[in-house]
Image 1: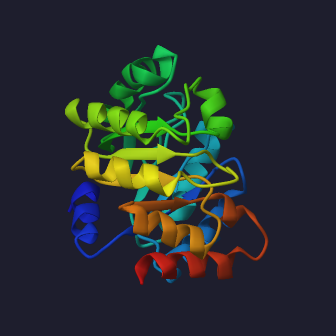
Image 2: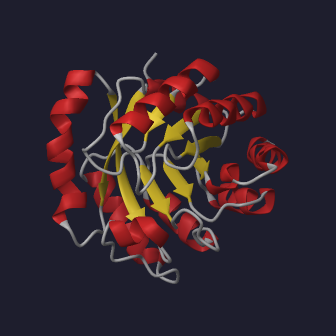
Image 3: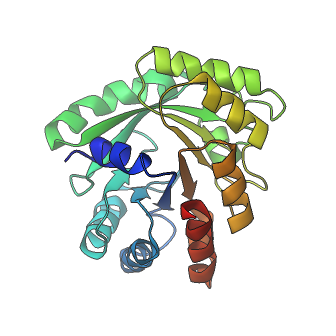
Length: 244
């Protein structure tokens, strides 16, 4: 079964949780431990990536450790075409739709496409939309961030992505954001598209995760909390709130 089919099948039973592990934030062994913990708690997939500091070496080593310690798909969440790993099961082949730079809209994708084909990575087409505050990813991606009080603009970007053939849409507030994407924006976008909606950034506890799920997110992504001491109980409560 392809990774996309796996995700679509699981979505029939309710919202999904994905754990985002940044190869630059811990050594590979710790990444493997986090993946093992997350799987034991019910996460549905492991995303691997970060805005800065990802190299071919730390990506490969992290992906191998995750594969050895998890029983769910691993999906590369790329920051550019400079690193690709055959040890991931799939790659989010994505365009940052509201970037001012063509590099993040299409040029990095052009540079990376031959490697994706050569390595046999399953491409998961996705429209990536940065919502204020955007944090580091918004800065690096030169995004014209979507104002938090403008759900119609977010929905217009999302609809454009779907009409261009993208099979999922990701609303991103940015890693470490003080608040998640507003619930009214999530709901408005969800009603405007027919493809799965992914939401990440600023989801730091069970209450926030439940708000995002109840607003209409199909997939909830958490990452920053696993970089903190004592992450296990918080991750458990987040996943439980999504699955309940």
